[in-house]
Length: 368
Ligand SMILES: [Zn+2]
Image (tube, rainbow, N blue to C red):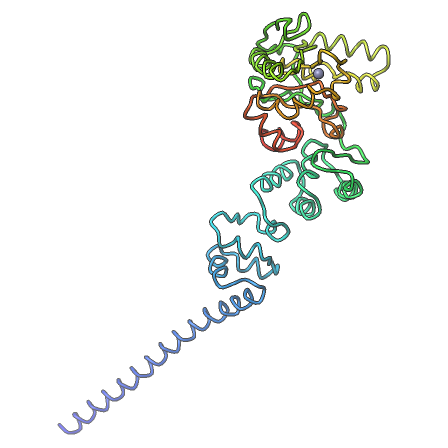
């Protein structure tokens, strides 16, 4: 009996050991299978990303940013994307932008956003960046929303030979003036904007001071900081033997209203709109605008004077910008006005000058 018992005990033990062994084997198999299930697709993805052109470091970043599926599904790759995806400054939400442009500057990102905010689809914006230069796109911020962007792109390409950052013409017109107008924002700032879109109410009056006849024609008033800035600029000009004085400064709403109505009654609205701003839309109501004359030349020849060329190089150092530059009529809605200068403060004037944009574009891009 004892023997049998011992036998059955040892048989039992062997049986248990066998079960244990099977169990261990099963667990190991399960672990291996799990590893294979996880690892193999990952391995396939990695090798597909490498095939697209990404390097191994980029792969880690793609995975960290959870972009693997998107990139593989759309076969996204550019050398620039491969480089940028490894940097901290990479902006994931602009993934497709990295495919069509390199390098992308902060200004590009901003313009991209502004165009989207203006109602253009991301697809349209990418198309624009693919085909146009920066200065060929910024006018769109001022223009009405263009329904068929291909027409605009073709227009720009047709005129590209004669256009530069300093001169920009198009065959078609893209603005309907005085439509969907808005009150001018930031009316307490020297950066405020007034044009054929943004207007001031009849009640808007800046802090104005009368100008001494040493600096201006009789009865000229301008905004007080503008007055100080002009007097400093005037000194700098006389120091080099030049002399410009203000022929016209602040003009109130009523003045513009009377002037515009007079033109309308004499020549009709269309003609009137081409000569004078509508009331509330004249920048002279801000008190920040000055029309300059040189002592020797009539104002309409101001663009040919030494004073004008000096201003082009130096006015920004005193806070003034040219408001209706040569060759930018299609954007500003005004023919070249060499005599009309606008005070915005030294810092902003310098930036506007460096941008080569009209103030209308600059405002929509950076200040809105
Ligand atoms: Zn003017």
